[in-house]
Image (tube, rainbow, N blue to C red):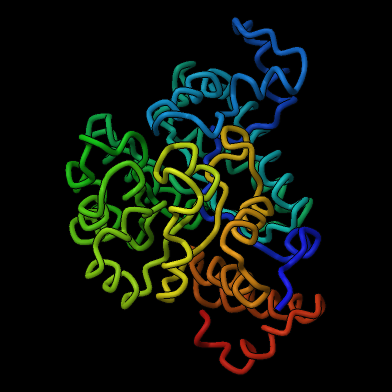
Length: 359
């Protein structure tokens, strides 16, 4: 079977379930807001921004990768800035046929100018709603606790997620430096979400081993795993993840840059797919990683030899793994299947016969 072309990958309806708001600003927006805030950087061109805000493939670690956010967060402390950046992210996703996107961020990091948590969530939602009205893209917010900050803060953010459930927030996450900051320290936050039926995804197995994933699943009851590259180290746990259809949010460009993998050849995505894990492809950070959803699929095709059927399987995994009510998810799946057929994708006929099994 012929490998999918870049045009085909762009035309496909897609999801982005793992994308950080503060890592996905437009280049032009960084230039404009940096000038407004009198940052010490002289951003005259897009290349100037890339030189500072886009990490190279030889970035040394997740900690080095996260340093870029010290810059972008300075530009995201006012309501109009948050609304604009959320809108532009959704608009950019729409431009490459992303039909569903979950945007994650930590309101804790946007309070330096006095904004309150609910104001921050409302500002982000205003931007996403505007994009939804204009382009039809469906979005949700994921509120992030931070591993290296006091667990009490995570509980407050979990309470925020519960308050905004049904009004734009679809889940809760734990992000930040993974090593030495175990997820189980934040159990109160996760229990509050679970007791209020809020979905949970956790960054785990990116900068630490399989025990971090075990903890995210069995202590914190995560419904999805962010990155999860180190799952390959524990065959028994991987089987459990597979048996329970726990989606794994893979971000190829980011995984290389943060040194979750030493090189693309070492990434476990092909093994995960061979074992039929529910793998999804995502951007992580459009600006910081210099990527798009289409580019993530391009990387997968070029480095792992994916054929059309395998690409469409990954696309479907994204829609199946969305933090959406089942009825709405089924409607999206029906729409996507129709679009597959219009693109001449042979895979759609097989899925149509087993539609329910793909949700």
